[in-house]
Length: 478
Image 1: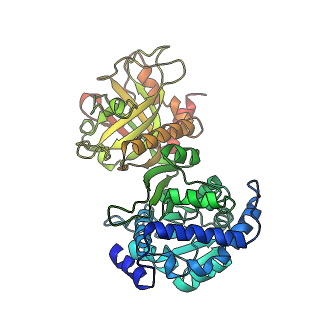
Image 2: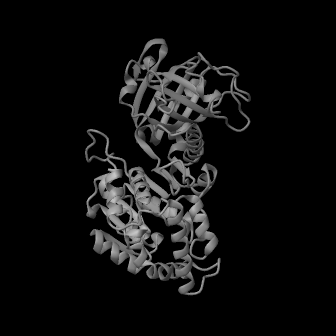
Image 3: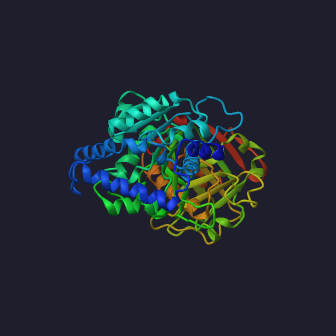
């Protein structure tokens, strides 16, 4: 499919002899000439409205070139196909249209004349009705709508997203893509937040990309920072700072420099993929008690996040119905001699197989709980072999296979900070007083789980209606 699309771009009159470097140079020169010929450059402190007026004027003037075949030579066509594939992966085999299905709709922010649209249709199997463009340039939007048959809104992305929310359409897109435009945003942070309101809260993707790469955007920015005021984030740390406080996990970071050799030449490539997962409380809280095992020793040694693990075989298949993913809740280790006395701890818990450890995934589903030390209270030097109680009350995200360990560590650290926030607020804060956990501190060893499934060595599992469990916990403080 990539070869077919690239050949199509070549057949349409793109300059076949032009190298990737020459193409990039041509685009930089175009930006310079158009910027010089339009309204005066806005100051760096310009308002969003003034900035948007400037953007619209510049790209209205450039519509002729961007609508031509020269804008998408074969090398760029291949990169656009890669971006489309990253934006909206095909639905999982057997996936239906239920509540967990990702919407098969894409918002193409800064769509221009529609360079990405054919690739979204080809690679993602989308109809024109499943693609919505958003662009500040009326001239660009008109070409895109006429050429590709898609709806294009002439608007700032933040204003468009706010209108979608007001109309009751929040979370209606499987992906929101900022292709070749993120550096042009007046406020990248505001644009990212707007994308969050438009993307599905259950796995919707937010993509930041440029088919000519990050270094190319820097060249444009050097030419006229009023048109391109921002660089693309250079690494996971910058992306993490940009997404701080937003329910986004960094899934992919591809930052390839331009290369003329070895063949084939590459113009560069930049593609960042975030996935959005808005935490939600569980319909039923999950109560577990089991003996802490040593697991695979990866939490502390490789990730810097020590965990206390409960194995699936302790529960005789009861975990099979628990979706793999990251949860948060409360934990208590029975008999652990913690400094300052026994304590109930906040916990972020992965239930699953650790798929990022390719070739060394968990042989069975494991409950891996990271207990957060409370102020003034530590942990026993060794609580392996001791019974641990867990109460899981909220779901953060599905389990994922990350492309690298740094991305996995970044996601885990975000899981921890997000769990701390959720557990500090109601309704989840109340579960720290749940009698199931409180009985873990009893000196007589009371088990305190009536009606649950009981397994070997005192392992227990039970699901309890959220509101009922919350009421029981609240009664403990009265």
